[in-house]
Length: 261
Length: 263
Ligand SMILES: Nc1ncnc2c1ncn2[C@@H]1O[C@H](COP(=O)(O)OP(=O)(O)OP(=O)(O)O)[C@@H](O)[C@H]1O
Ligand SMILES: [Mg+2]
Image (cartoon, rainbow over all chains, first blue to last red):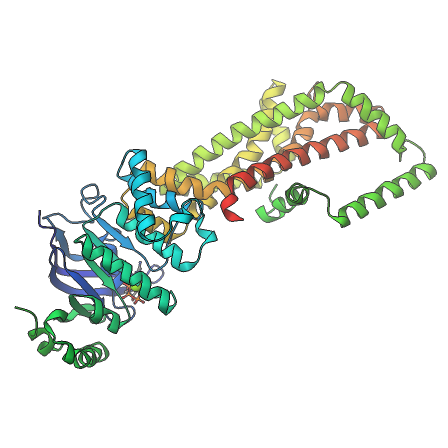
């Protein structure tokens, strides 16, 4: 099992509920994310980033093309991917009637871990995220930052090999966002996870990811940048060029050419 | 019984207010005291068969409480009918939630049932059933079950897409999805529908008992009416109101325990 994510000629067209007018959310995507890579996706609002994630976690099916992991599709093979792909959403989406501890055990209940292990694993992750004192607290009693940390704990506790984060830190204040983002990447790298995150913060993406995928609107790959191949001195230039690519919605083959060999 | 759910609910809310705060609001005490005094004045001026004195009413209450069988019978009828209605309502709501087609075909019928006035159900019950208990149970269930169906289904559909997507991304079985998300998310709606139906059932059961029952509060009211005993009618009314309030207090207590996370 390689756990590489192969995206092949992916296309997604929605039909608007009322009028039936088709909306192209994903035009065409082709790329592979290798195991252990940390990838950031940037693009204009509404360019289909969340739709891509929804297909990857199995909530939507593509109109054409496929996403394959180990020769299976996450939207086709419901049971196979249980516990393998974790996601942190923009809002924490904690269940308000469950304590933090019970929110983190939710995913462990679904994969059928014995209760004692559910508990100890959940406690371990909440501890790692600095939430020891709040195991029995309800989400409504906590700050946005603490809730988002609990959401991270929930995602990591099931020990998925692939982690997705969809604007997971965008709604928090800058200091908190930086802190939690830092924890996210520390955990991703120390556990050797594959991570894909969507962000509006280009700077954040370049600072933290190994690789940058620039989506056009509707989603197609405008640039695929191996960030680590760029020497630090040239990073500001890179940022400007990526900005241009996003603005003009035109591919820039020159950036792509600078991919690591 | 075609009022919208909000109006039905508001009646239950007042008694619940008492239970929530643990004491009567000042305005309630003032208005009840005013009523008490006015009635007292009226009883001094009007003949006793129009406005009996508090002393007479108190005597009737004492008589009633000395033989509480009728109260017990009525309470048992309401409890049994509500339990059956709830199980039926929950089962139907779950089926409707699970299978769209069930909702599409069954919902118009449920709404039709809700549009029928209680009086018509009472007449139908007399025409269709001979057994008195069956008549009463039929009337209560046919009135209460549709409300359970609609309120519970509403609660289930009200679970946010965000939460449904979050749980679905964990890839639970259909059973887990229902048990871990839909059911707990529906608890507030379940409690509200119980409050609504308690007050409704207690009002309807007395009407149902008027028709051919030989026991229960409705029957006692009928007897009191035939003997022109206003004091007794009044006393029974007090008993009914108190039963409803106690029931509401019980549900509110339960609500407070189940919904601590909301505070
Ligand atoms: N369920 C749906 N039905 C119809 N259209 C949809 C649906 N989901 C998304 N779309 C449309 O698909 C397009 C892409 O939406 P998506 O949410 O994937 O964008 P995004 O890149 O995540 O945007 P943002 O940065 O604002 O989060 C939008 O035009 C959106 O209106
Ligand atoms: Mg989005």
